[in-house]
Image 1 (cartoon, rainbow over the protein chains, first blue to last red):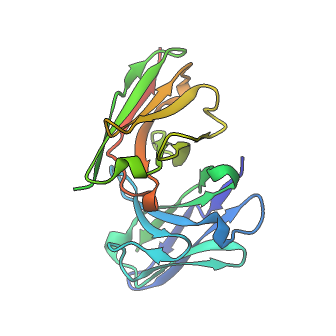
Image 2 (cartoon, each protein chain N blue to C red):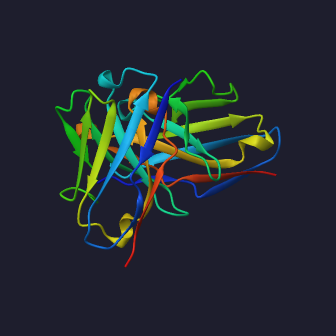
Length: 110
Length: 115
């Protein structure tokens, strides 16, 4: 089973920009991994931010964007707000429709 | 309103079985693939299993293969997870999730495996 790796933690200043990445132990992440990004705040269920690499849900603020960057999936937060402080997880799809979540990144806005 | 409500969690001894349920409403359940995802206390998310909309195919994570079984009853808009031979490492909050854009998520049900 593949291992999907994310940065354990990042800190961003209010109004600043940060990019989280999501790498696969099997090689480059491509659009065929259909990358998802989720936000989870303490005590809450996760919420989908980005699907299929770069598509936002209707509730996803425009300051969040998804892309492929250097063989990884990436989530960029531009103009960080205090309410963006949370854990962020990516999800990749593999052969046979199996999914693997990333290890998660804790984002601190400070 | 689109909603998923899990139930069936609780405290169970190692080696025993438990069945989780997930009641769906507000969307066409019978047209949607469904997943179970779990999260151990203080840990990250782990994908557990998926079932096709018509139940014709099922996929499992290596960690639960052969012990867990996902199923559904489209006439009742309900998803199930039969968990056998439970281990301490299965202790988690279990979420059901719709495959359509991986949303919505239920509120989760806590399973604790302990003697």
